[in-house]
Amino acid sequence: MTAVAFIHGHAHTPEVWRPVADHLPPAWAVVAPDLFAAARVGSDADAHRHDMAAHINRDLAMMGLEEPVIVVAEGLGAIPAIHYAVEHPGRVAGVFVSGPRLALRRGESMRLQVGAVMRRKGPTAVTSEQMGTYLAGLVGLDEREAAAQVRVPRVAIAGEKDSVGTRGATELQGAGWERDVAREASEDWYSYAPAAFAARVAEFAAVHGL
Image 1: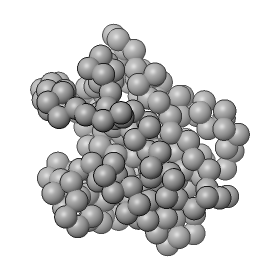
Image 2: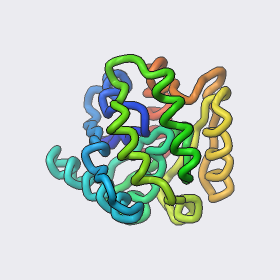
Image 3: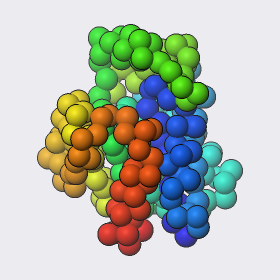
Image 4: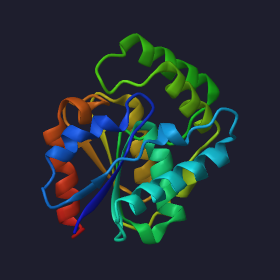
């Protein structure tokens, strides 16, 4: 059975993945860990990284998923996704990241919070408190070197209109990842084009026999 673990970024709750999951083959198993629940005020970046990995493991266990999963992430979700693939290689069958952000500095964290507040809308938008705590725990993390250690099938895809994600995808390509482009898409295409996003995930799984 194919199983997928969806990893959210900083601006949306795990519910953003529900429409994508609805377009995957019905026999697939799906889990979407809530990593906002793993964020703790005052925790350092390394502790936050390990807490997120533990939270992913806990959710997989609760679902009874023992087989390796395809880890699908967006934006800053690429950081815990890559860390999980490196630290728990036996649990991961493949990694699919969209619009990847591989590192976070404090100044960028503040800009992301302001930008998200200005455009916040919809039922999957997170609160300012959730976002602030989550981002604070990621400041200082950088998975660019770790990305080269991922040995399972892996692809970085970026929307054609997503300049930051394109830069991240290019960096991952340099680390040996496949790279792809979602034509005419923005960074959040997973949220407004869930069928197309699900089709790319299914294609990735089929190509690699996952």
